[in-house]
Image 1 (cartoon, rainbow, N blue to C red):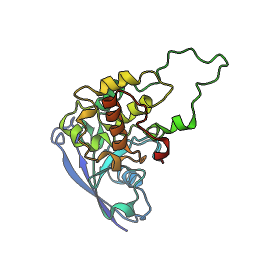
Image 2: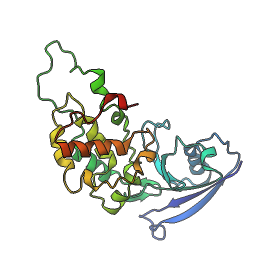
Image 3: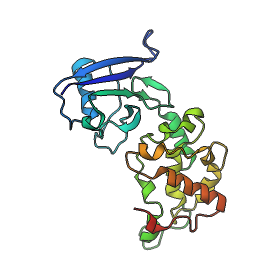
Image 4: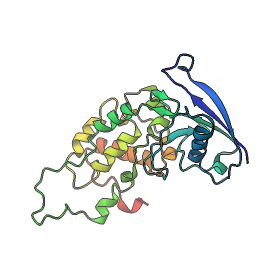
Length: 247
């Protein structure tokens, strides 16, 4: 089958190409089960070597090839041609500055990520037997879903609240905070809740639900955000999540 790609391009360093423009490429002998990333490679290697995009593992783990495919955020390495058709539109993810073509500046995204202290905090002495800090399976289930985040930015850059205000920490940062806030071994939960209580924290979420379907790891992003909101309102994480509710 033949497939036409309409790709949004931009090179801020070259006059005349410093503004966004569209360019079309047609590929022949495309199999329906080929992945969009493979076809992007073909375009770059066979037709235009100046096309720029990020990619690494090509297995949906690194999250580096996030882009808008037919208006929907996704990882190009996970999307099959048969699922998007013979006319495919490719754009960079929204809300972040374009460096070149499909490559965006991820620094603002990671700055928000850092704000929520995405690391384990526990000042208690390490157990004398040298073993790790133990946790029950039920306690682990409280935050198991949010450990799946790969920081691809698909959820955050699908969020209209983030598009409107780049100072909003965004869904991905809240998901990362959730992972530690509900970890019974961690001692920094209240500090993270205080951070997310600020004007550009969790309350800028308008529950639009763009983030959950955008997640390539199928994290229940909006649910996690709701649980953080409830923890702030109640002043505790106790009883907010029931382990049996998590799939």
